[in-house]
Image (cartoon, rainbow, N blue to C red; front, top):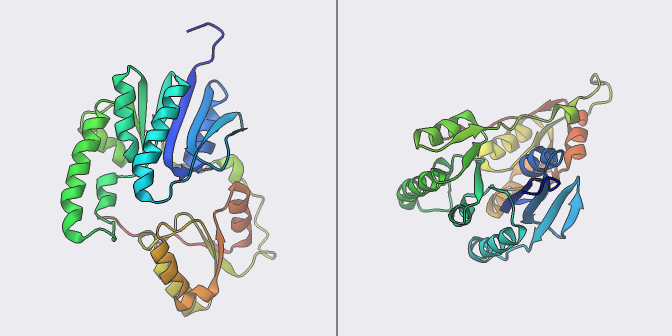
Length: 274
């Protein structure tokens, strides 16, 4: 490597939005302090932001196009970057990771979730499919992970799972960015009589318990985030408690801070995952 050439890192995701907190704000933006950092991700336009070169992937029409066409496009763009390290964030990009590794590249798999356990919770899959599919996916994920240069996980539990499978794994937890959340002493007089929830919106994170609680207590809820399933969104909007919801959609970092300032309390009603 030339002495004056910066080490080049490319992050890849065909699933996450371009402003994903973990990928863009916590990892890519931090890397730019010392490295040439690019992000291949679904975005409306390619651009330079916070010194991260964002390379836009076109939005797929459906899940199948994302899995096949978008994955191939991601691989082509990754090759064109000729990076020193590739760091990918989606299980469906594991085949890309293996192909890049076969070419002699250093490749990191970032496991945000416990994928086999998540498969068992997919309500849109028939119950008889989930168990065998989760077993098959666990085998393939472990097979691929052992061949990666490293695996980065979002929790110690997921890290230990990969270590037990023989992969080189380390956890980088999703702690909040304190510099963004250091609020002044709360001004309780100016706060509204509302509670809030910010994050992915679905039943396993307590969506319908929130709506029931709002209806029973006649309390208003500030809800920020995106629904994981359009079917659940339709059911939620027809729920009697929805009239108490101010749905804010996806929020940027300043939007989250504004919601916290407005709210008297926050809701964390996450379900235990089997």
